[in-house]
Image (cartoon, rainbow, N blue to C red):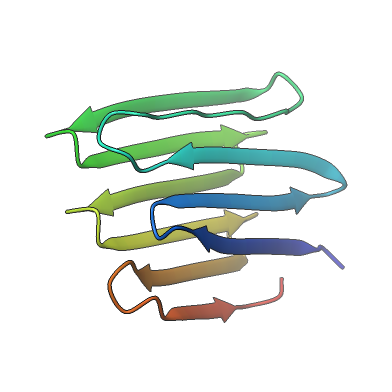
Length: 112
C-alpha cells in the first residue's frame, strides 16, 4: 500500500547519491564525500526540517522529517561506513550499509 523506493549507487567510491520516493513525493539527497565538499539538493512540500552538521570533517549527519512522520538519518564514520535508516510511518524501515574499501553493498528492504 505504501511504496518506499531506495536507490543507492557509488561513484569513484567517494560520491554517493540517494534517491527515494515517498507517496509520489520526490525526495532527492545528493552529497559528496570529499573532505569538505557537501551538497544537498532536495524537493519537498515545504514541511520538512533539515539539520546538517559536520564532525571532524569526516562525519556528517542529515536528519529531516516529512509531515512529522518520516525520519531519515544519514551519517558517515571515518569516510568508510555509511548507514542509512529510513522510517515511513513507523512501519517501513530501509537500511543500507556499504563500505568504500570493500565496495560491497548490503540492502535490507522491508515493505510497509
